[in-house]
Structure formats: C-alpha cells, structure tokens
Image 1 (cartoon, helix red, strand yellow):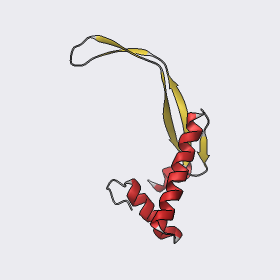
Image 2 (cartoon, helix red, strand yellow):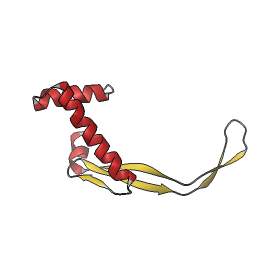
Image 3 (cartoon, helix red, strand yellow):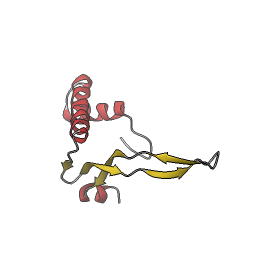
Length: 96
C-alpha cells in the first residue's frame, strides 16, 4: 500500500486481509464495521480517539455570506456540522 498513489477501500481491505491472515470477505466486514462505528459515533456528536493515530470529531460551522464566483452575487451558506480529523503524534511521525 502507498507509494505516492491513492489507496481505495478495496486496497485497504486487501491490506487488512493479508496482514491479519483473514479472507477478503472477513476483512471487508471488519473495515466496514470500523468505518460505520466512526460514522455512527460522529453522527451523535461524539469523538473517536485512536491513540497514536488521531481523533475524529464534529465541528459546527456558522452560517456565512459568500460570493458566487460566476455571477458575483452574494449567497448565504447555512450553518452545518462537518467532520474533522486531527492527526496524532504517531501518524505525524510516520509521514515525516
């Protein structure tokens, strides 16, 4: 995995299967379970902290007025919640 190219979910499943010595089907179930767990936790407004890797959280963005670059007219962007990720020390050190 890696090497300057984009890694897809399929690549991640293959990596997990090979490194955990399980089938791709089992790895797919595991990867889906992890991703759904993170998504479900964030949808409740809670954080997911993976020590050494990072923290997933939800940030609230206030409404704001912007400008449409094509028409130059003002537009109102509504407030919304957005996912946020802060890399942990272990992940930061790994990509140096």
